Image (cartoon, rainbow, N blue to C red; front, side):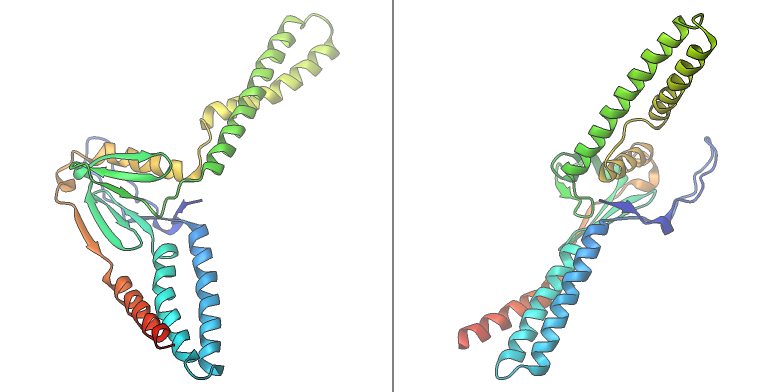
Length: 249
């Protein structure tokens, strides 16, 4: 389940026909990933520090090697992923790469079993910070189906109440009250539109911004990809140290 950072809401834009005011980067993260990453890192740190302090022989070195390897890996796949969006570009911070795509270079944003961006050359980039939840999609679909059935019942009761308005004051009032409640639920559904999973709503927002900004002069440029060596280097060092200690027996 993914939500945009509420502290980075877009600034107001000027009316149509005038230049728009670019808003600050809006950040999308996975709250579940952040919480899980913090918990796992806390457990690794607790066990590792305990082994370093009270361990004997090669145990402290093994604990340091494990922490050096696991720390960056857990951070990369849980806390690091994020999507930064503004009027000019889409910046994707994946576990091991940072991809910057000007809106003019974005060909499409796709949602299937994963959310991904396709650039003009056909290269695909997965959005790790916006994981697809099939469970959330199914839940939203079930809620829509229930609301649709309630709206259909409201329409049927409303028609019955109108045709039976001459039966008596009590019956008309009762039928009208029930129909009004259901009709209110149906009206709320119509006003709010179909329910969507949170990551699907985030993708809808990205598509809307892409459609609005892709042709603007400030959104042109080249796609840049940078490897996260600050994550890769310590993880590789930890793996090498762990392998050496394991090989020494």
